[in-house]
Image 1 (cartoon, rainbow, N blue to C red):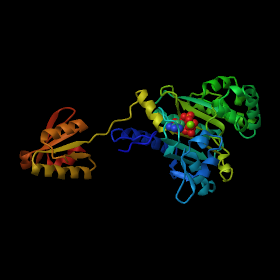
Image 2 (cartoon, rainbow, N blue to C red; image 1 turned 120 degrees about the vertical axis):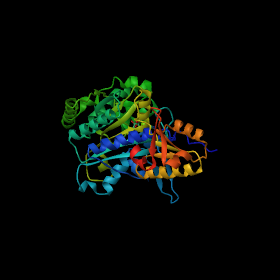
Image 3 (cartoon, helix red, strand yellow; image 1 turned 180 degrees about the vertical axis):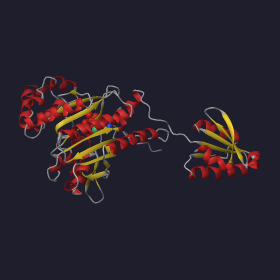
Image 4 (cartoon, rainbow, N blue to C red; image 1 turned 60 degrees about the vertical axis):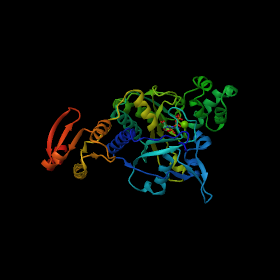
Length: 415
Ligand code: ATP
Ligand code: MG
């Protein structure tokens, strides 16, 4: 037999309600913040990610699923959601429409990474993007949205880490300070850090290698090099979060993996799911749209990793709502009563009630056993006596009490 590819996972029928629960909560929160859903293709021209994610990132350098299609074009399975959404914003002229353009997505994403707990090759994201708003209110609203989403799900164990990495005005200074700091340590740093020294020294601050981390701990804080505009943006954001009851920690080493971030960056982090603790990452990327060929448009967004969210909920005992079970199982004793059960099941379903009958030719005893296993709320039994009297005997499986219900009353009874 052919097995599932490494780093991918099936969602089995018994577990899919968990996914639906989370996706339902995501859609509900999105609607409350007046967002509409956007869907972009699973693959894009490779060039989009080279420019929109950035060529100093791990994603572009090592993680993309890139291949030539039969027409010889280089295409890539989306490694994240933002670049495609930014493309659609530009391509559909949304900058000339109603701004801010606020949208959300639920999407698979593909990265060629070493699979481990919380790290897959195909994973899923719930993401939100706001285009057109430069005010700190937009950053605050976005963070509050994530916070409400997590609360809605019953998650309270995540901590919000916040930082500002400045803009292109503060970048020359905020790049030079870490360079001066890291220069004497270059030989002790990992290869990736050394390669970032010239191109993107800020990324050296959030390297995950232990040796690099220890050195980075003493590095100068980007926060001390912000220009006035970035500094006041950050102050307003922090004040709004505090006023609205969101607790945060300043983490000067958060830089985020993508090249296009500016000003605000944030992560929601867990200690309950192992080494891959970042459940949500986001921030502002005011230069992305311009870099992709659109007119300059500020933007801010985030993405939550759904597999990590599920892992967190499992590990911390947060329930996934109720596993749905069928309302009524109709058991027929003989051929004529099975026919009747079949017809009543159809009538119940037409009236919005979930119903199940035997499709396996099982004995009445085995039908009861099946209904018990699948958690049916009621079992309605029809035998030759019942058929003659036009009734069924309905057992409430949680109280074990039984009642006789006339066929014409079935819909009313189960509704
Ligand atoms: P990490 O620090 O884990 O490498 P990242 O910075 O690459 O994450 P983003 O590109 O910001 O991650 O993606 C947003 C979210 O998507 C992450 O916070 C995480 O929850 C999830 N995610 C990213 N990569 C993976 C993966 N390979 N498997 C599962 N979830 C992932
Ligand atoms: Mg990564």
